Length: 231
Image (spheres, rainbow, N blue to C red):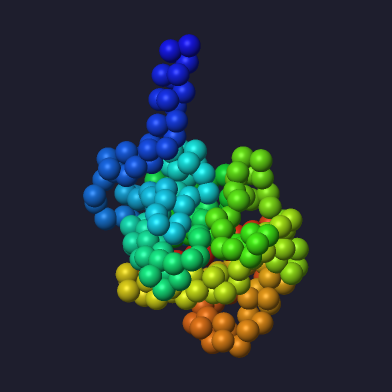
C-alpha cells in the first residue's frame, strides 16, 4: 500500500509540475522558426506555462509531453496578452490548446503547427449560471477537441463568451505587435465568426485581425487557430 501511495504521488507530481521543470531546463537561446506551419521545424522552442492567474493549458498530460511549444516571441506575446486581460478583464477565464513540439515538425493529428508559429485557443465560455468558466477540456471529450458547439455558440450548458473572445484577440494582436510579430490569420468556424462580428463595436476592435474565409479541413468551433508571423 505504501508503494502504491508513493507511485501515485510521484505520478501526480510529475503530471502537475513536469512542464515547469522542463521550462526551467530548456535552452535560453533564441528560437528559430524554419519553413511554414504546414512544413517546417523549430529550433530552441519554448513551452508555454501550464497555468496562470486567468489561464491554463488544455491538459497537464499534453504539456508534460511537450505539445505546448512555440517560438519565444509567440510565447511572450501569448503571456503578455493574458497579463493584460488579467488587469482589464479579471473575471474571464482562458484555456489554450495545442501548439507544437519543442523541435517542431509533424504534429499529428494536426496538419500544421510545425514551426512554432501557430497556437490553438479554446473559446472562452460561460457556464449554466452565466459565469465565466474555464473551457471544460478533459480526456472524455478528446481534451476539448471533441466538443461541438451549435451555430448559436451553445454546447450543453456552456455558451461561448464572444465578448471575451474578442477581447482576447484584441489583446493578442497588440501584444504580438509589441514583440515583433503580427497575426497572419485566425481560423474560426464561419457561422460562429458571424456571431463574433455581429456587434459593430467588436468589428471595430478586430478590424486589424485577418480571419480566414475558407472552410478548414476540420470544423474550428471549439477553438480558434491563430497563426503568427515575424514582422
